[in-house]
Length: 283
Ligand SMILES: [Zn+2]
Image 1: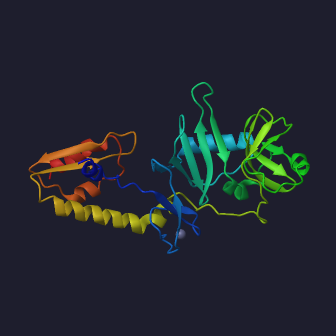
Image 2 (image 1 turned 60 degrees about the horizontal axis):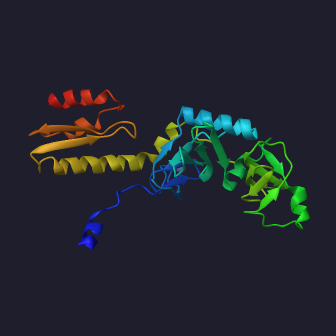
Image 3 (image 1 turned 180 degrees about the horizontal axis):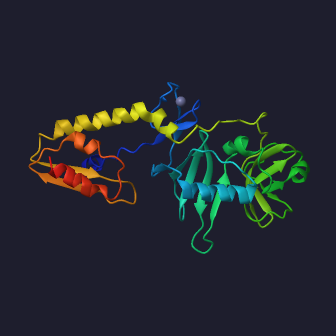
């Protein structure tokens, strides 16, 4: 009995990864870009909630990276993948890599912290002008140890506690500074010349690159509604505008809902349900 009830609980069909087109430098919802280049897969973290960074997010990220590391430019396309943490925590995906991790410190500090990943360094290292902890001497004392990942290294620095860039004799990495001890997460030589991923010309490029697959999803949705609409005496159509919008159920007893009426509602926002209802009622 228990076995049966366990089996009946199905995992919702969440997308567990996104793809990235290395030519267009944009995220993809399917494995091939509109430009025909195969994308590579980037796994997402649970709860598989991913969205583009909007203006407020971009401003937070830009300000922090500038204040902390002196980084002037951030990639135009940033994805935020919600991940586990005490308060808000997002993994930032950019330039086709896990770029950084944004956390909002619990209520007392009320501050964002952004920790760059080693994969982000090749894109930003030329611009980093502060937030650097030099451990060249400490590494030399350990006989030039090449494997510093995970090591706690006492150091003298005037950098404030938090995420830092670690430097040791031409090698760079990431770390976390606390009470004059830096926990080194990585240390390696940045590629020469640094990796460059040109930004797409505009954000609409992301839509253009994903258009074939989005059209495909729309075709499937219309086909599904067309198949189902005559099989039931009532038609329920669920809408959701995202995390902050409660789903709306349009219940039209005895009516046949035209799929084109639903799919052609442009610019969905909180006022649209009323428009949609009157649109459907008039048919
Ligand atoms: Zn492409």
